[in-house]
Length: 268
Image 1 (cartoon, rainbow, N blue to C red):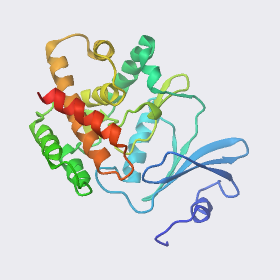
Image 2: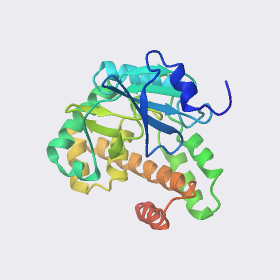
Image 3: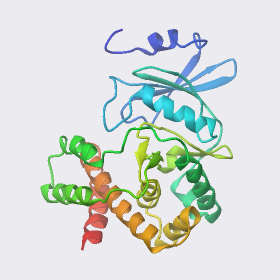
Image 4: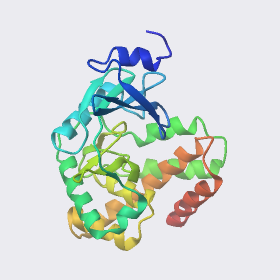
């Protein structure tokens, strides 16, 4: 197998998908993605330039998690996977946008889907925030003071009260209503504090404190302990988000400044 996989090479080894038509999709940050279609059936094909390493799951591990989630109605079925290739079914549906979180009914539906996700069997692979930070920092050549603050926040996170299977990347474009809620892109999925998934939703989309409270209540009811744990996970997500953005050459300065502002305000 060559180091650079061509689309033709990959399609030729996908059982039943030879002679499929294809369209390249936008949005893949670390891989290339295509929509394949044959005889009216659509699938999504992802091809990596090299085998994946931390903080990502490898594609075979991702396929195992996604398959378990699909059996629970929370993901699209996996049709093929190897070290650098993942083929999944394509499901028609409405991909969420940041505005989707403004609907209280959507928050309730999302909390219900998270309950189902967090009840699935653990993967045996733990979320390593410090390890992810190490990877990001290797590519950062700016703001050493903020980098240090992020590292301190990550190091201070307490051992979770509960660890379970989490998606760990619940941004709006990874949520689709079919009409049931399904989650896309399981490459970060592993065992973590379940409130990290809620924290990602709240912080990435800058939900209001009222919306954050509603999501937490739909998920776990009220309680000071849950609120404190969510706040800690929100701070963790802010730190990881800033490091991730700072490690990417194309990140907008305005977005970096905005996340840094939230980060520093929460530390004061």
